[in-house]
Amino acid sequence: MPPQTFFLVSVPLSVSPSDNPDDALTTIRSAVSTDQGTTYPFTIPQFKIGTLDALVTQADELSKLEQGCRAVVDKVADSLKGLLDGDEAKLQEQKVVNDRPVENYLQSFQWNKVKYRADKPISELQDTLQKEISAVDNDVKAKFNQYNQVKTSLAQLQRGKSGNLSQKSLTSVVNPDNILKENDSEYLQQHLVAVPNALVKDFLKAYETISPMVVPRSAQLLAKDEEFQLYAVTTFKKHAAEFVHKCREHRWTPRDLKFNEGGREGEEAELRKLEKEERKVWGEALRLGRTGYSDAVMGWVHVLSLRVFVETVLRYGLPLSYVCGIIKTDPKRAKKAKAALDKQFAELGGNAMARDKKGKATKDDSAGMQEMAGMGGDQGFEPFVFYEFEIV
Image 1 (cartoon, rainbow, N blue to C red):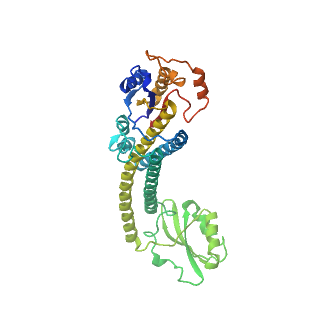
Image 2: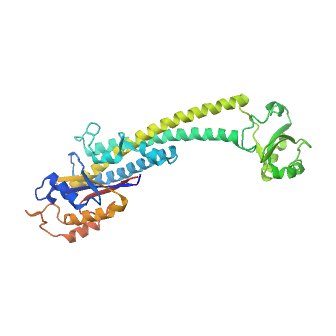
Image 3: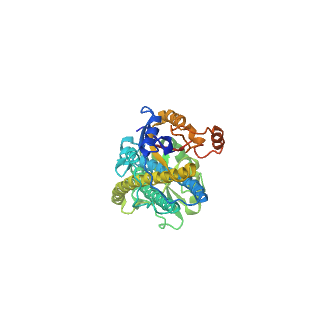
């Protein structure tokens, strides 16, 4: 699915001569042609408004929180992508909000008044959303870490069954009863060494002399495959570590003498157990990832709504008289759509509320607009309240 770009736009009702919300939304629609994007109403409730200083602080805090929400949405999406091996069709089936495509949720957005009561202070709503998005991040991260651990353990066990003699489990290759155990001798220790076929002649000539006190002629061939031959070599315990080190220097692979309890049957049982566990945790991770993505997107959009409201109060003042719309476009058309909005509402940068009876601005304050543009912002100064975000 190609990326989708969305604009959240808030303008004063005075952009329409009638000061009517529907007419003001129509003005936004008329600015962006249908070949550039589609405009939908975006309803934001009336929140408690505190002091000017509090609003300025909240604007900054909400900006940071919104970036955090966006990061969590992206992380959950990446986790789902890894879980589904990059299958885009299956991924889009999971990246939904309340079992609906994200664009449908955005186009018919309604503030969740049950979960986030609009009569609460903005700071309290902000704290609630911060805790919820953090909980989503932590829960999804923990479950996917659990899945990755199980997957890694399973992969290691599977490699142990299918690899060559330098990698695979030796449970089905070597009879442990034929190997000298650690406690069988006070002085001697036996080592298993996987030698590449091309180095076998060199190994047989050199193994007795690579370290002190290697038992002469102790090399016993136990198994071989297309790449390696497995030998057992006996040394004195005093020089065992040096022998192992020298083997690695000669590109011979020392193998661990530990065997799975229960032998081959025990190993098979462990493999079946891990395969079952991997399927179980995979399903849990998928369900939690789907739910987490939905919750993260909803939290993100509610934070965006608060940002629009706070910025609208700061930009247009009281009493509140504005309309908000959401414009759906895409990365290719976004630039033209934004340029059309800039052209339509350019005069808002100088005098947002003052218009004559014909709907024209009563004062040209382009110099003031340029001065405000120099103040910057996380998306640069716009002559109207504007936030752009993308759903991939």
